Image 1 (cartoon, rainbow, N blue to C red):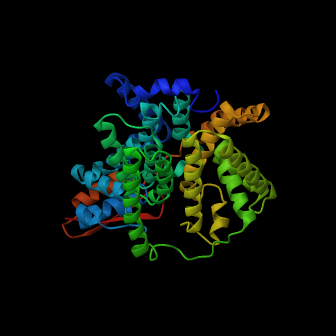
Image 2: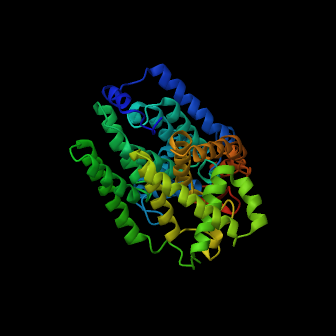
Image 3: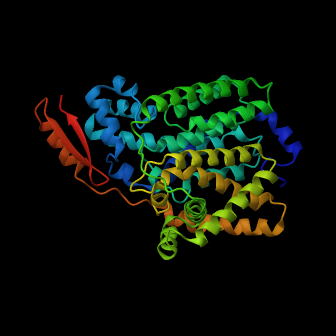
Length: 434
């Protein structure tokens, strides 16, 4: 095949069928299968549900103590996080005992939205081969070096960002249900994290390619409006929430960070990267060389591919990583040095890794150089047979006796302040008993 899009006649033949619905039984089976895949990565989310970090400390506590409407209007971390707030508001209907399960189920459902969108007909013109779309969906679900974004509401903004990107670059929609879903999906993604700012250039380029498309114009207007809303929140509340410790930025450190966290960990997994890092150390020329070679590989694909969607994925991944590196929220300074460490700042790398894996898949299928095509296939097999299996199962959250603390909360007198420890160790949720 010449590219993701395949021969032009096949694409033209598919155009009348874009937006064609799939039977309800097949949709249900696919949805359940995707849910099972996500749950298999972190089964304790449903088998032993607990709050995780901000899910309890910020979102549920704010909804319970201040009221869901007040919480929903309040930016956190410098921007609006509407999905987290809405999930917390919904969980109040089921009480504290069932709130962690509500959070877990909401996070799981959001995590399958982008793969479901890929498997639908919405990108059938751009990627006609369903097998390729299925493999891309699997890569998104199983992306290595991604433990931090698995089955928690706080980092669901990453999955919503991927969904938002797919909506922006998707083919024309037929029928109002698809158009309404696109707009609502963009609004939810845009008001749940700052990555909507990086979607504006993608939407603008898509519009410039198809100026006559009403959909492209609508998507550009919506993404711009969302970016303005989030931008206003960032400008007015962001400075007070961001750390001002030294970055420790340098070209070699940047290359080493990209080489280690994206190309090594994104191919072979976080566990192997941790071993490599312990041997080579932070100032590794080897990691910097890998980073440089990886960037050359990605740059070459960006130039060669005729897939607009792939080019935009690489652009989006680059913008997301750049924004993260400008002001990362991590531990001890210098922050770029900390970001090189295994299992640190993982949320910042998931989208760039996903873009890299999409490029690797393209090169495996369509690179014009046979030698590089074979090398890319070896790399893709390494992802599928090493990186994904090693990083698949995420360690369960430590049991801090949530049920015991719920009983104590229920027995507490009205007006008392109840402290409930939640994973990870050191986090607490403070609730004022009504």
